Length: 307
Image (tube, rainbow, N blue to C red; front, side, top):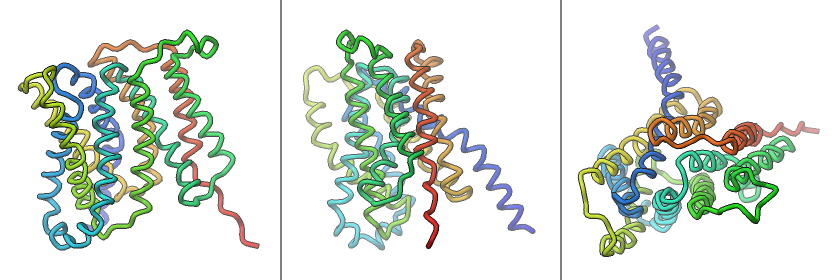
């Protein structure tokens, strides 16, 4: 009886967290748009993941020490994952946010599950249905609609924003990050593995952050810069990852995956409420294409009946 009660309580917490986790991730969009003029992109990413990595390493210290030899043998994998997940999906997102809006970031990033599904078919040999293929096309057309600001008939007159390009590169890297984690098996648990990836990311980010620190145009370190690092490290870094992992463990991957569809909604609302960004019709139309596209692309392909 007690075990059933405990599970019911854990399930209720997980169901509440399903609605909170995308909001935790959307905090990173606010941080990204607040950072220009306060802290440089690579320095922010380095501080974020160094803080997160330190806390995660303390939590998983016994496991990391026990698996230290296997972790060192696979060091190049953690450096690669760190480059994809912390450099490109971290610093480059902050760099993109210097010229594009938080709303654009959230909508473009919404297509990352589609790229992961497509990469799983091409690279990992997973099955793909016609419904999933349609979802890929619909979602990617929604991303393009946001990038070109809805001006399909006058592409030559569109004022292209470099930041959108940085975000597109970041979602491609995120797909690679997710696929490589699935392809490369590791003896580490989720917390210890993320801590090791953070270490790899810190090593990759360090020379870029040092270069930024030495530039004459780099803002002096301030209290606001410290708060941005702490906020990025604790909320979208550790908080979102922990909440997502807890929900996945209690409710299962398929139920939790649906929470990702709330990301663009929360990101857009946060950009409007906190940053005062305007909501354009190209954002609405882009979301109307991206969200159902993600749903279709993430549907499991039907099993082929045995002869």
